[in-house]
Image (cartoon, rainbow, N blue to C red; front, top):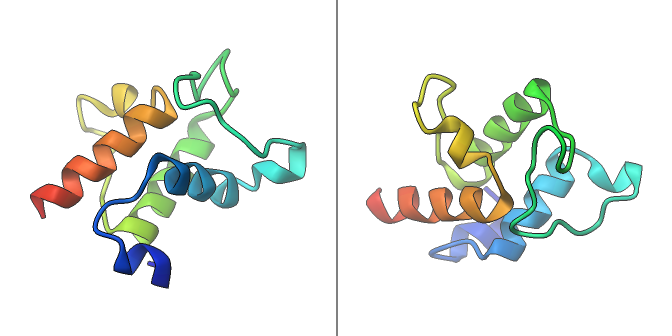
Length: 95
């Protein structure tokens, strides 16, 4: 967890966006912004299952929130940046 996220009670959608871009090295392919409502996988941003694993690991490291592949809501959690940010915020509130 970075110093910035450790001191913040809840990450903003912009902080989650920065984490996604950094964790998946998206800036290397010219992606520096993600629309919060764009689809992350498939026809949207084009992420794949390996990206999902890397992203789940990054979320765990950065925010202390675990996303299990057998969670029945995993597709919805990763459906968009907005969904991912909401999930992280909800789980951190519950902790």
